Image (cartoon, rainbow, N blue to C red; front, top):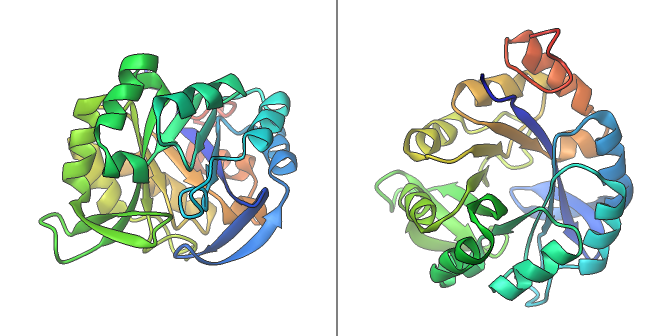
Length: 259
């Protein structure tokens, strides 16, 4: 039986508030993370992703209190990332209510972190978050960035994804910085390339601006679709996206009768 495509709202949080920008810049306040998470849960979100977008930049830990308060009111899987540097950080986040943990910058700095987390908690807990830019310096044409998209590495995005899977990453959250916040649609080439190499689920992120943008990402190979600003501004609800996916013959939870 085919697995249902997941629809995941993303809460990018800075200083305890949800923020959103364009290409990871010019962040603006979008609301309270606990209130928004509860709203999306009530709308039928399949998961919530909570990313502290300045945790690594500010060299501080993720805001555990916000995670705890969110988990108390949202009864669907909660993925939390930002500032995770050790397996002990993962243990603490799981202890306050997270279900899965996203890692990015710290794993690039020390790839063995992926092994540490997977060995201790299992691959199902570990999400590799990839902030990817197009670049002529890598064979694939895509390079990985760190620190909320601020620092470009020399890592080929596809090579890094493959290594992370081999080390124990259980899921890939693939965010296109070029598309992020533009509302012009997902980077379908990037999604397709990640799907071709990946043996684990792929979450497409970056660029959603209309309900019609989500189905092409799934057809390109995404197992889940993630968006932020279209939900935060009220332009789309979770139900709008699920209806659009079901209308394209894609299985989604709660819309089985439409698919």
